[in-house]
Image 1 (cartoon, one colour):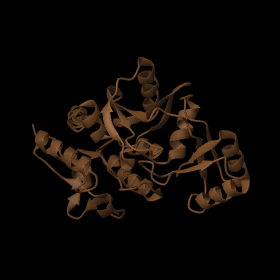
Image 2 (spheres, helix red, strand yellow):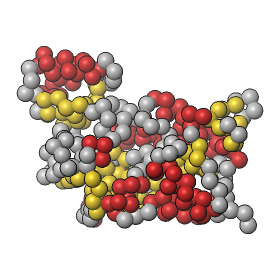
Image 3 (cartoon, rainbow, N blue to C red):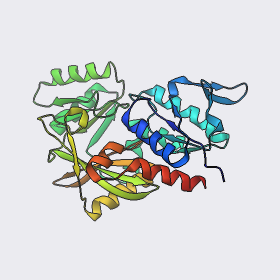
Length: 295
């Protein structure tokens, strides 16, 4: 029986993309990394191609990364993968599932509608309402609706005058029309990534701050460590990820004095944190899972 042809959607040269392609090649003998910036949708002939590679000639496509940074264009790239799905290609995770997680607001609304605990959040285009929220929270984090690794996030403090706060919000709104802000929580200098494959919990890692940066992301100097979350945290994260029908994902969680809260469910999940922090080769597990699904 021929082994399935599985392509990897990612960014050529990036560690997580290449290690996933390596694992696919080890298991199937086939290796193909596909950069979505090179993909062409031929609506006349109903084809999806990248150079001489026909995406619809694959049995499956593993999506590790759709773009370097999140933006509305990221949604367009995911929409193209729906063409492959309609032609019988199994996309991991389903395009519609990833689409609901790229936009921070879409993720937040789903989590809150299902009563997943999150930081106090306000979303508005009204500057006065946003200013009121900052003054009520004391300190808030402004978050772009499309971003990863805390890029573009900004702190704003109620210690400033109302005019200064409003000016800071207006400056943020000049590039992010919808203002998404959350109350800044006092955390322990670490947060957790809980890894799920096919809805099953694989393990967890912690991102631990190594500097005085206000966030713990690796982008800001944090490092990965093993984490052993409580059963309650695992149950909460499991419920959160179950809302999105993801094949592979990571749920970002933080522990507070008032209990655990969920920041987000990832559209793609983290391989490096799973490997370096939890000792889980998520790339290999993901390929094995894909092979089982395609069998």
